[in-house]
Image (cartoon, rainbow, N blue to C red; front, side, top):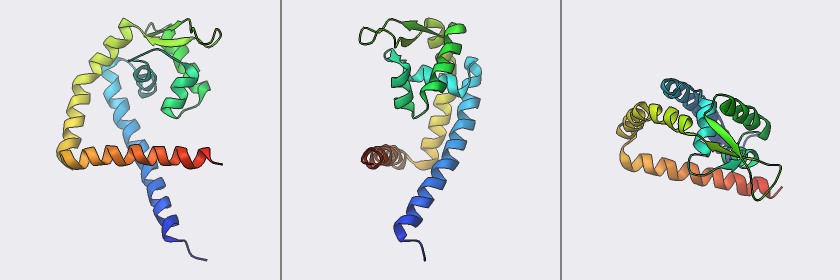
Length: 150
């Protein structure tokens, strides 16, 4: 029995996404270093830069487990980069909020982040870069849609 064209495409997209994940994690570790944080810490801090969120909300937004977000949030609070705040919507599920020290750590990442973004934009071209972001966002939404149906 041979694979269908859809199976071949699915496999290619999946394998490429695994490769991209590894590439992005390696780049993120390098970019996060000047901020004195790890890629995982950056991921959680980035999720709460605009507004405080509960651990479960961060996990959903980032596609990682609630337990790993909780572990990282606890570390960030211990290091003074984040704080737990009361959650008016749920008494027991505290909100994770970035502190001024956390914002400073993120700020130290920005110069190299800007350079890497420019290099990628130059390599792909502005139009292809924007299209890539659009297609990846659409792919993520499609995967959410088909996995929510099961």
